[in-house]
Length: 128
Image (cartoon, rainbow, N blue to C red; front, side, top):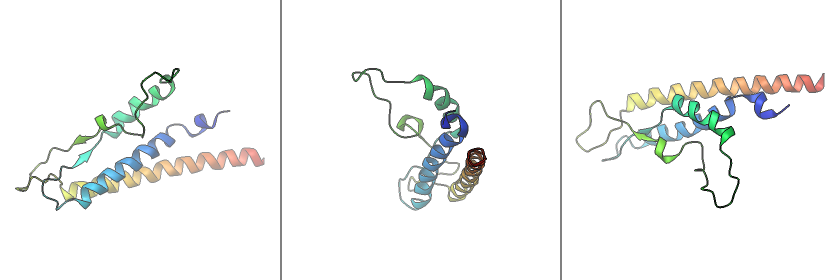
């Protein structure tokens, strides 16, 4: 039995949620910075792309191009299009960012609960 299979998609989901929390926190912290552009990524799209490719992308030679490190590549992060841009060029909508951060935090907690449930089941199986 492989532990990777026991935890399913939740390990990858936690990595992506952590990275998204960092981006959203940066947006919130720079809400009053002139010219700052709010950034985010599409969580659902990345989950669909990264799970199948996790198994298929293997470096078999040192001359191969190494995959980008980290859960989200720079090409996957986009600038948010503001609903009402400010005069100083800042595109952060504080209410939108706070809402997205709270939703991301709740979904992070859900993944943690699934993982802890899986760990509890494994511990029960080990202890008997």
